[in-house]
Length: 313
Image (cartoon, rainbow, N blue to C red; front, side, top):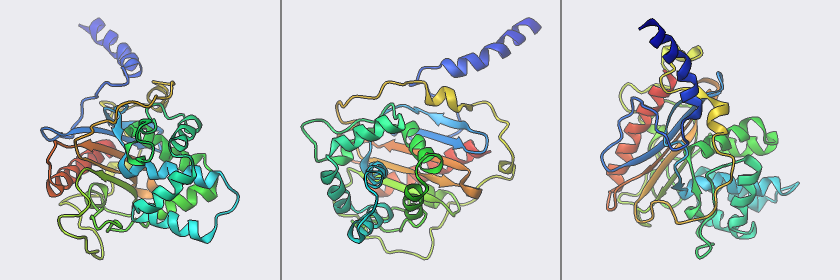
């Protein structure tokens, strides 16, 4: 028995680093029936992925791709006119679709995604199909690629670029420009401050109840920015793995293909949370066809809380 346990202990790190990209690690979060979820929690202090599920599964991006649109635009010029600064603010803070379309068209549509995938080494991100070039929300991406994008903004991008984009995400408004309440997921599951970019698609063009901004989002009961133990490096190894193994599991950029989960509504919550923005939390979800906005946002918020607590404890 002693030899068996010793052999198992030696094999576990190898298993963690050689698991296929589509593998789902066991964890505490409870996925609602009919919902497909991909998530990643990355601890910037320990440089480890502390929680993940379907980290490389592709989802259609909805508005999360607006981060890549902003990076591509800002890195392609030395100065930005006031009009475009206003468009960037609207696109990032209140997820304005018209602003995104303006940058998308001027930047070459899907070529934006191709450039960003190469530069940031995004392995699952691909532009919309060739027959739908104007649909920026049909971009494919994964939870791991979104986490990589946040890491790029924090650690590699020109501080002016990262500072402008993250500065707007830190001031994300409750009401999207289309009237939907974008304080689902992280904003209501985790006590602030946080910097978030949300995404939603498939719920129609008119919200069931038009958003009216409150003074602050109301967190779920017992939600917190971080458990008491989070001030120190995590010692849990049940779902953690090295950044190197997770981020280099696949190195070939994805090609454009069928739009993921087309016909199913998607709801995504992504961002930076915790003291000094220690954690990157990305949760991408696809819900059953016909799901209501109220049910989907409630499920996603509950799941975001569970993912956050599991990944930061």
